[in-house]
Image (cartoon, rainbow, N blue to C red):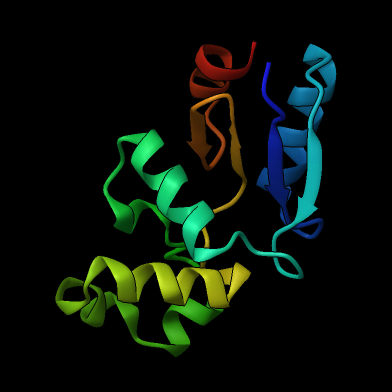
Length: 119
């Protein structure tokens, strides 16, 4: 099985829930601090393609960085490359937790998604 990477932010309640869930399942994973070590553009491109999600779903729309950059109005006119560059440059822009490995990706924490992908 491929290595599971869990991009987490320790001040994020949702990240703590995901971490607790992974620990309870005995899932082996590497915890990566998303703010200090956000995924690279290439990693994000891979995760996005594997997830099957719209790239906009990778944005933390309730975060300060998102509001400061006024992305609500700007995202619709941005190219995928521009969005990926933004996400890679600021871990706080990425919806958390981001968990990836073995060709699977979950963004955010929904227990049913976690069950389906990581149990």
